[in-house]
Amino acid sequence: MHKFWDNLLSFIKTLRKRFGNVGRTAKICGSMTNEKVLVIGSCGQLGTELVEALRGIYGDSNVIASDVKKSDNPVFDGGPFETLDILDADGLGAVIQKYKPTQVYHLAALLSATAEKNPEFGWKLNMEGLFHVLNAARDTGIIKKVYWPSSIAAFGPNTERFGTPQYGTMDPTTIYGISKLAGELYAQYYFNRWGIDTRSLRYPGLIGYKSAPGGGTTDYAVAIYHDALQTGKHNCFLGEGTTLPMLYMPDALKATLDIMHAPAEQIKIRTSYNLAGMSFAPEEIAASIAKFVPGFEISYEPDYRQAIANSWPAVIDDTEARQDWGWKPDFDLDKMTEDMLKNLRLQYAQNG
Ligand code: NAD
Image (cartoon, rainbow, N blue to C red; front, side, top):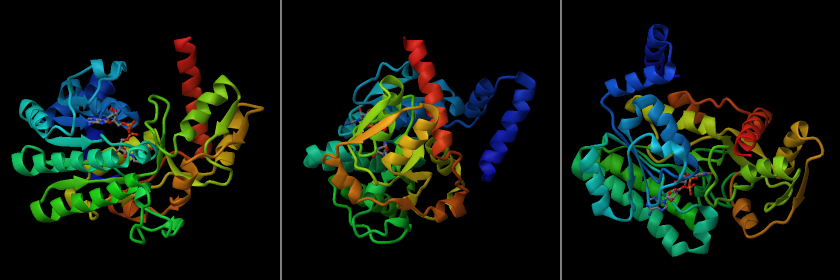
């Protein structure tokens, strides 16, 4: 763990001793930093949880959530929300002038499976959205840091599948992967040419219980937990043996916040960092679930997403993230399964 977090955490501990409320003390810390954070595409799978985490650190009023359409998740009632289409550069400019955000998390994208259905729009949204954010950072001087996620989709069929290195063959075959690879290079270009502090992670498939996935090739790994509790069986759109890299949402949030809070000199890669949590095939997550839901069954009916999965890495080597800014995941497959099922059971009980 790097210095910033050490200092922040010891400060929170000191305040907690005095005030006895870590949420409140974290907000006190946040408001003392004068940071304002804009999250674009905040109502999706990642943004919903990230907004909550950021508001815990910086305070509700200092985190501006935005999306082309507002979700009814109560998370968004706790602080400012702006309806913003990232393809509208003037609209983005107006939001920046209104709130003067020092950090932007740009999450709006068309994901792998959805983008394959409309490749031209996938390219447009994923690329133009990034240009608008990077140009705003360059031209206004208000935004000090930009976070933009890449994906394991930036790799391709000729990439080393096991132990995929940070630097190796990158020949993506999906429009989503092509846009992520191009975006990585654009982000690095803006860092080199104009000094924009761009930071990025190549997320694996993200798994969480608080929000629904948005059309990716790894979405089955969320649906399978819901099915386990609702019907005791899951029909998987990927075939047996399809090993893919995955990450539990609390680890994804930790990595995202850690890279954004690391001192700039520790960020040695300005394209995007490899990031790993765990890797498993459908039959392995099913076996993990069966430990907690006896009799759970999986069947297979691979569809068009199988070809996408076949072009992606199986196990990622994230040595650079570990070395440069101290990345280390907390969750393995069984620990994630236990936590997912526990929280989903609670949710189902609460919602009836
Ligand atoms: P998601 O599809 O769940 O959410 C994307 C959000 O962007 C949605 O709320 C959507 O309404 C919004 N959006 C769409 N068009 C917009 C526009 N024109 N203007 C503003 N907002 C718009 O995606 P996610 O899973 O939360 O992913 C967030 C980021 O992480 C994306 O860049 C994605 O490529 C990356 N990523 C996600 C995963 C994953 O497994 N979820 C894996 C790798 C990378």
